[in-house]
Image 1 (cartoon, rainbow, N blue to C red):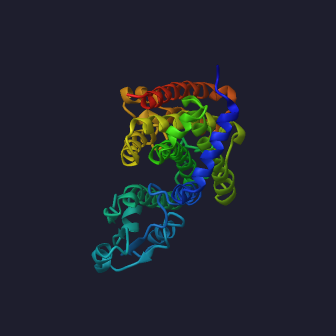
Image 2 (cartoon, rainbow, N blue to C red; image 1 turned 60 degrees about the horizontal axis):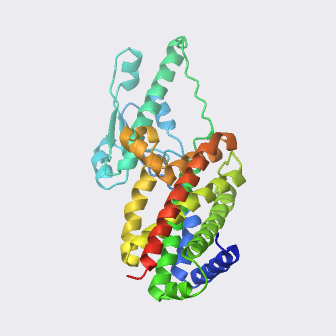
Image 3 (cartoon, rainbow, N blue to C red; image 1 turned 45 degrees about the vertical axis):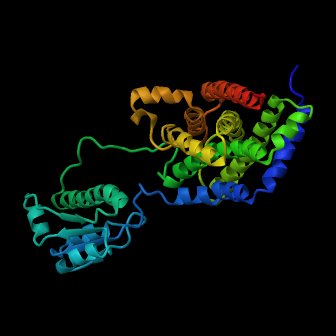
Length: 374
């Protein structure tokens, strides 16, 4: 005999009322899917943005002027011309991340076919900008030198030209990737926390035994917690995607939003089951919090949301196929970035369904064992 869906519905509504009386979790949900997504989308540390650049121009030639004018927003603030004796003080005080030194006679030596050096001084304590910005400065400066020499000597164009075409994100806007991946990570985090907290709340308040004294079964209790918390996270995901990302940040969503939400629902089936399983294993909220940290870090960092799966060691990459986040990230990127349909993502959907079923069975077995009299 299967569960009574009417009881599952009423128990789920009870979970909503319990959540409504928990202001901390409500604030966490609102922040994660609004300000948290917005901040992650607009502050990408690996992307060069408004870097402070100063130039020591000892040549004062048309070529040096051309180099100075080539550093434009949004990667750089307008470069500031400074004397050579201000190089070290500016770096010491953090006023400039990069100081480019153009030596005297630079243009004359370039036109003479020599190889003069440009000196780039970098404040490496600003690690993210220093790492990516050095390459930017080098490409921009050398590109201007090459263009200047071609214009003076009328050299023929090279026989091969590289034509770059960026697919799925033509402007290479970091907010598109950062915001969507942050939203996906928050789906996993909130679903695990909310479902596990719902079970631990019942245990700490002593209401689990009250429920079992009623004509309900453990499966109905767990199903109620699963669907009610999953519905909350799914609604918050839709708001984050449609209002914050697509509406406020103008992030391009290539595929079907309903198909993505369907995949998110399958993912929530797996992650809420995981949260219930960890809550059934934990003895209290502090222990549950430690389990959540230990589980979420590898689930998010090794799923492909932070770094491509191809960069992960092969053995670890194959092991992560057992994690629901791996399939959800692949599904989300295919739908939201590339506009894939169900024919392209049915395998991740099936994997999420299978992983969710296994996790729910384990959670139900553990929950039932914990309730048996000893």
